[in-house]
Length: 110
Length: 112
Image (cartoon, rainbow over all chains, first blue to last red; front, side, top):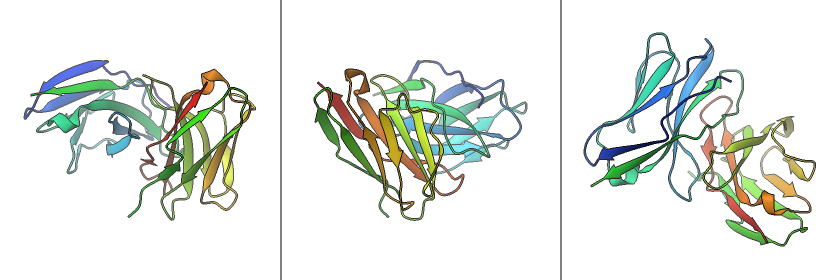
């Protein structure tokens, strides 16, 4: 599975968009980009995933560059409850497991 | 519907004791995963089941760790002769085929 690189921490003002970057320069053609987040004392929560097209759901948007070497998770209107560790993961389509890195700790401030 | 359920939520064991951690996956999910998460770190993969078959156990740190899923539903992670370095949160996840994994809230194991 390809590795990902994320900044260790980011701040965001409440009500503003949070843009979380991820580099995955060694991603291969059959690998998906997944995003999870983990709030203190809870298990990781699925947010969104994509292969090459941009994706949007009720939680977030995922923007994947044309060369697929990087992506950005966008939380359009961050709230204090979005404070969490966000993990960007590359997952092969023919395997089940997720390989987590260190993630980005997002602090949403009032 | 119910999510992934793990029990106990907290477990304290004395060094050398055996422990058993239980995972009830989402009904109908064929894939089940165990992860270990040390304080301040991301979850680390331990093992993976598809139905009752253990297809990948490459992440189990030693032969003291053993996982089973005899009927393809509930799974148990057993740790024999616990050591202090086994202290961590143990997470279980399930999924249907290659759909997103759904995680439980974990069992926090403290070995004293």
